[in-house]
Length: 444
Ligand code: NDP
Ligand code: 2IT
Image (cartoon, protein in one colour):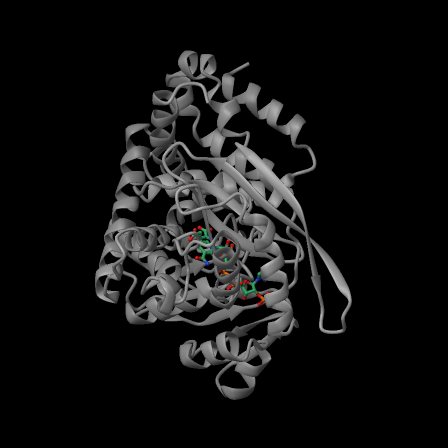
């Protein structure tokens, strides 16, 4: 049996109840075959694959808090510190009722390679809780965040592990968590990113994931003889990533016509009104029905459906496994020629394969959405030197990081004779740097 198959079998046996984690490992290890096969003896002896698929540690803890009725609620908190070979653990905190250990492990595992691809010194980690922020008062959100950080603060620090936002965790939650860390640890340090601008946050971090997604997409199209300008784009999600992806797509002359949330979706043939979308989602924290009510050109549909809209480019920006094989078939039939993942693992393995086999340019999340964490690393740099850079400076660094990521993965794919397979290219380029650091640092 090949080393890859041997480790895949072991990982499946040991983590049988974690389908999302197994899906992520399956994709990464299978696409690394050319590299592993070329170095099989060394990697087997050093147990590189066993080590890279087993987190350094996984923390689970009780998060008790009091709701507005005086009732004590209990949630489960997680932080998985996966691999710190190239820098302190870095990755977001997801607050969503679906969160469990397997989901946090898949996200932490992906984060190792994504963070490596940014070329910045950050290791892989992820955390969160099954807490549902929807419908909670500001006081309840604060109570939860303070309790969550009361435990988490023992394990993190500016040079140890630096969490940030993800689904359900935005500037408000980061603020409450930062306040609690500072109170308990007595230290004002860059322990979290995505902070407010008045206390150490970086300009352009809010926009970074969506903007970065478009910078990489534009470069991928350019290198394949196409232009993003004038193209029709379908986007899923209506959160941090989706909103700024839509904004940058418009700035580049493309026309995004959809967005979605967990209850329904919008088709707006005149193009999404970003100011209205921000008002509905960022200010009012309301449903997309309010967008449709305020915009005569928009149609609101219940449930799922953005992938049925005819488009040139598709940008899944909501959550994992939101684009399945049926969606992929519909996109191809409608003439879509590029898919770039703003979310983490939004496309199922089967759908990814179908898109690639049908000639669709496919940029995987760990490359395409790396702009968020890259700008988080730029926030860490600014905190360390106690300076703040201008929006233009951060944004131009972000753009060159995303262009570089594309060229690195394109080059890695060509080097291993899988030209155009950007999934393999991203995994190989991310993996090479981490393995080099692991080998240099010995058995640890
Ligand atoms: P937000 O919480 O800001 O927005 C998430 C959006 O996706 C919302 O519109 C939400 O709808 C929708 N959504 C979430 N879960 C589901 C679900 N289970 N089913 C249907 N719709 C859902 O999160 P972000 O925009 O920050 O994150 C989106 C994706 O991007 C995630 O995969 C995240 O891991 C990834 N990502 C985020 C980065 C960042 O910097 N924020 C960086 C890199 C990747 P509703 O409001 O109804 O819940
Ligand atoms: O998935 C991700 O890369 C994020 N949620 C951002 C992590 C970060 O540390 O900025």
